[in-house]
Image 1 (cartoon, rainbow, N blue to C red):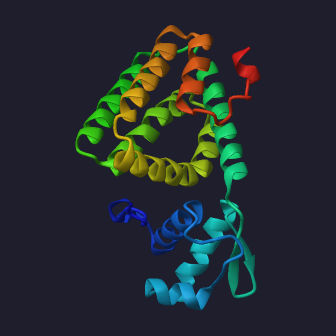
Image 2 (cartoon, rainbow, N blue to C red):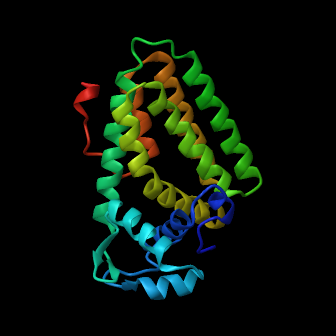
Length: 226
């Protein structure tokens, strides 16, 4: 399985953002283990850059709570099952809240957007393109966030997105390699998600959440869905 952040995703990134993306990928997939010390000089040499963009990268990773800044460097923090569960808990709450905001708006546009991305996800599976699948999967869920027209909700999602992106990418790469038939289930689950938005049905949304997130966050019953 490929163990790098996709190069094509870095095209519009600054040097610091690109370094952060690669290190974030390595931390989330455990290539960089907890307590690993990253020095500015070491990382600058690894990426053939000056220390300035490395400092920028460290600041971004600190914001993600993936490293702890120390003098002249940073120490990798734990990112294990508990941290992943907490992240998915937040996703469930964000998307639940976004869904609650759809009750009084015309949902045709967001439904069309979600259906478009679901079809592109199916195409990505046909071509065994985990990177494209990941992008359209995130855009599928982002459509709900954007439709809420809630500024702070979108800001918070943008804060979580870089880590969620890596988690989804790693999962999809592994599925493409070992369990491609499971994508039929994933597609059905996303169809249920669309059905929930079409009908504005909270029970169907609960079902979609449980199916999409498997065992993660099943104890979450957001008050927005009551």
